[in-house]
Length: 142
Image (cartoon, rainbow, N blue to C red; front, side, top):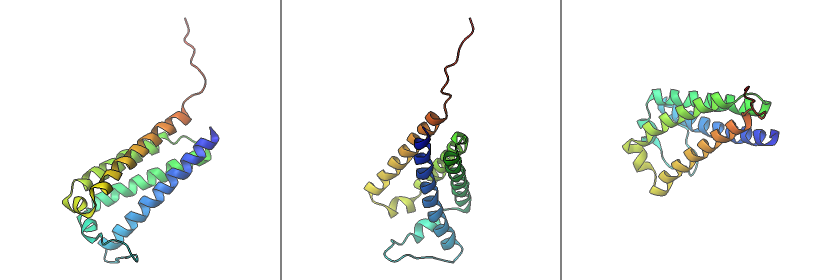
């Protein structure tokens, strides 16, 4: 079970870093410190469509994923921070996905990938729960 928790911790940590990277790029764009990457698509319109409250929601989700990853790697309870981060991530994703800028920035195949990511995060939630469940059976007194 320890190795499953470590693998989950690494995967959740990598997802948190990826989300943090996108958030930093968005904040840089919104504050005028635009950071462009060679060969990267221009996402200026999409970044302009993201409100500051959505950036804060994603920041809180990144913090939650980071705490969950740390707890998974250290053997602590990670279900609550992971679930909270997942809810915040879903709220941010649903509000941004509904904008015209998001719809026009990606192809239909790329938009479909969002559902795969959310599905993987839900599977991750189930795996975190599975690793934390009490292994000892409960005895009911007669």
